[in-house]
Length: 376
Image 1 (cartoon, rainbow, N blue to C red):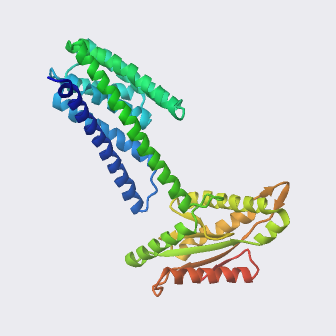
Image 2 (cartoon, rainbow, N blue to C red):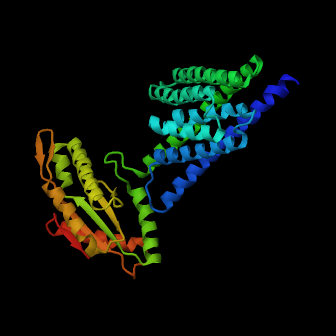
């Protein structure tokens, strides 16, 4: 048997299989995240990826163990076990208590019928240590080559120990062990590059999505996000006969704040007001979202609320701003808002009609003394 037949072909097969496993995982998580977003949820992407990852890897390992567990050839899947533990510890950084990890290992040992084998217990101890050590390595990771070197040295150290235990248990010859260890190093190196690139791309996409949809100063959603979400809310309300109420408001005399105290104070007023209102919305209904739709203009969509149902929340928001302390550069500033509110009507043929009516009500509040709420 030639070197290429004995080592290269199995290694490439394993490598492409594991890359396929990773690609399928990434596809599944992206589909779940997209599905949650389509249903109006705001998923924690990292949490979704972690939860799906642990379930996915458990299924993966169970299938492998059922395939070869308790057989003389079960050692051939050691690299898959190494791959799995590195993936969930280093890349997903899962938080798993020691007792939970121990229960999982006992389950797999029972599945493999190895509870009475001493070397299997030694393997289990180092396997657990591998998990927690890789989490420490990731936690102290440095950018660039130093991070990769720490990853490589750690995975090589534990791979060598685990393969050494497997070699003793199954009486493997030295050449087989060396080639399997080399195979492990290659798989883990490619895994690092591949997963790291996937996560970097996901982080870049997340950053671009955030920049596109969020206001840099106040960290609330911007006009672009509002326009898209108002369109969706309008269509869903019309199709499902659900109420929709729109609240527009301006910070009163904002130009005077800028001219008197400076633009830095103006920025503070905008960001502090946005923070106060966002916190209040979380208490009222976590699904309510604040948008900055202009310089000092903000908007809130009350999906599923009639104007009467939203009235108390809206007047409460105006009162909170009025009674809150705005202090910047040794200046105390009195801030209030003018509000225009409207509910979507059956005669509205587009979201523009709803927005215009709310805007007209906002203009009425500003023209009649400010610091008031106009419904209509």
